[in-house]
View 1 (tube, rainbow, N blue to C red):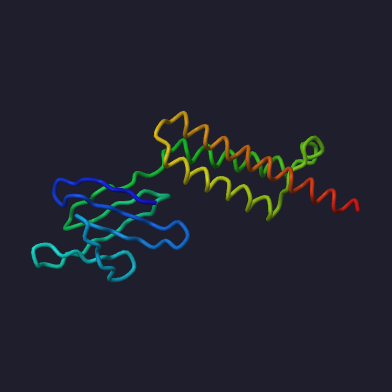
View 2: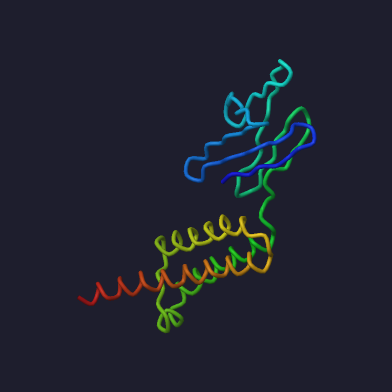
Length: 165
């Protein structure tokens, strides 16, 4: 995920973080910073080496600490995004554990269901960060909850069908 901002002190700052590896690339005015260790990078300004610390990730919000200045690169998800994702996860987990509900519409539970619904929630947070309007963010989160439910139904249907053979 790439984010670029203009800062009045340092100019154009671009931050890129790989979802799969977590690798971070930071550029200030087109010059890539050198990674020292962990979340500490080195920036050359006027022949002087300045340490830059990265706080957070694209899921929790990203801030840079440069010479005591805190620069917000990516805001954290809103409280209602977390609430909808957690509510969607809990809805699917509760449904998969209530026998009466599973007699109506079976969905997979246990470790498979928990991993599936957690993945759906994670996708909702990631894609929801790219959406600007709050109502669309809510619809994205709800959409992934429904998608997790539907995939959980098809997995449960396959397991039930295989057990009847």
